[in-house]
Length: 275
Image (cartoon, rainbow, N blue to C red):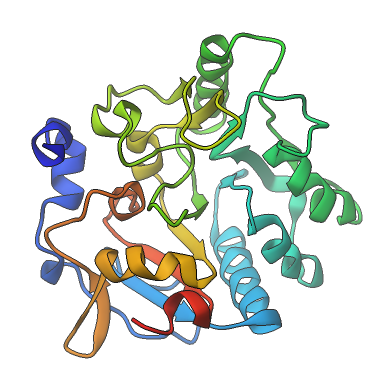
């Protein structure tokens, strides 16, 4: 079964096997990014309002980061378009080290590349100094590229200050899929390759569950009603507030939480209206 295999990891056990009622819930906060340790915060908005809330959340965390560098993981899908609200804010892009939570083993100019999606919608529109962008070395084999990508993260700070993730209708996040051994049997690697992704392209590199869980903050963005059934299993209403359901369901998106056990969820009304 999934749970005994997952709980072989002491970190997973500490984060995810504690009843969710012990994780404080925080209702809508006036300032994004100020949730209590271990808190689950769910924000539901649409259109430009959703973009603005996500941008304010990310910008607040980046500004509050007291280190010289702000190490962040971005995702593909709808995320690049939703991050364009950052272009309207005062952001010191020069301190950003950008990685991709997962990347497809395709040329960087391919429309399947998460880097290209972020470049087209966000990076290319930044005026002034750009962030440092860490791309996958697609000249290497997937396994070699994964090892090199993990080494790059270790060289700039060993953990993410913020991990921005999406979620598929099956509950996958990054390239961690519910039925795949990469999720079910974590091995402590920083990044791993996957050669048989259930979604094409089949060859990818992803940061692992333990790496994502070591992030200072984790934020999910999920839009569309195809996400609602899984969201209803991941999140539960307790005393009028949304919190993580317990027992934890076997979806990667339910297990990826920050090092203190918390997460921020941004949903549109199509995805979260039925919660």
